[in-house]
Length: 117
Image (cartoon, rainbow, N blue to C red; front, top):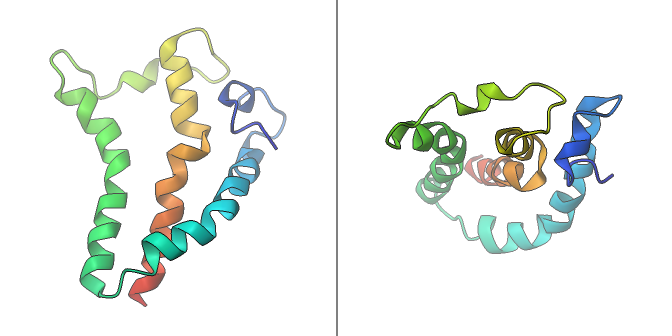
């Protein structure tokens, strides 16, 4: 259950889609602290909506920030090829695709979304 923590291993496994199982372990460990400190204090629909908006921004920022830089390219990640680990771009793409920290906002988004019901 360590392939998501070492993204270089993820694209070289037989069952590529199983990386998420190893990402679930830290989420389960963080559920209690995140829920009690971040989600329970959301008492109004407005506060929950603002947190949801903030949690929806990271993927857009990963696209918009490189494009906003002088000479920046919004499609910087397209140089990566599956199984390649030879460049810094390859390593960064693998981390963005598979490391649990890069999906923590999705996990917290789901917890905050439950406060709107």
